[in-house]
Length: 375
Ligand SMILES: Cc1ncc(COP(=O)(O)O)c(C=O)c1O
Image (cartoon, rainbow, N blue to C red):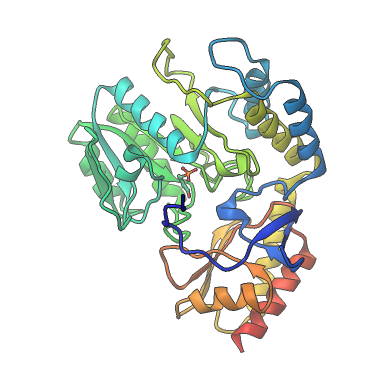
């Protein structure tokens, strides 16, 4: 059997990783400023994380959601505390798209309405519901959803008011900071107004923090920069540092009913052990403080790089924009300088999503390499 060939691949084979570095099969060392789309939060193969996972696996790795699993309660409690979201309940699943799918489903159940508002250039995942609310995916996704989706430009509050005023909208879904789309984000006053308009029209506000959450933006969730309270928050990527886990944080105003949501693997013992360990490390190593410190340093140092047009994003979720396409630049960074960066739908943007423990020395390595490849 061969693999179903859907991914264009770089010719690199990582076989080992530690902190912000990965090694290929020839023992070549790469600086990882991308973490597989922002997944690596506490660093590759962090010793405490490895220990937590192997301890758990030696006890029990999985049992179904039909019996008690105190690790889920421990995770919910820790996540509530560290993220300052104690007024939410947690539903655990396995990926970002699945988290969004459940959030959209809930919104529909709760409001009895079907239409969803999303934004131009949004990316919310690849399940049928998540694809439906994703703009600009060049695939003919089988959207057999009953939900209808309307895409609006970011930061145009008049259009949001107009659409919500029609009374048939179940939810507005928006990323804290757009990831795949290219690091655009809603302005503070836009987020605040959207929340108000949702409330007025009995629609739910879903904050997709799958990429921008878990400390990446310099706050636990990116929406917290705007001091709003979404009805539902979705999370995944950095949550398990590579172990697949997703979560839906649901306002306590929304009441659960047996059978409303469900999953076989979601919240399994191993996934919970990974997610608990990630939170412990974020707290113990004060990684969110590090994000803010190293981000400020990055923003200062990048000024010395000629040809950089703009830097978008926040914390260690950054997009370095040029006035040319960066495909070749990314290849040179990987093959000549051994540094991984990311791309986005904005072809002129280098996406930087390193581990949250990135050091200033690692920023220096990148800045020096970038200057050299730009010559
Ligand atoms: C903002 C956002 N939402 C949802 C997803 C989908 O997550 P997953 O690939 O885990 O299904 C992604 C993935 O890139 C994302 O960036």
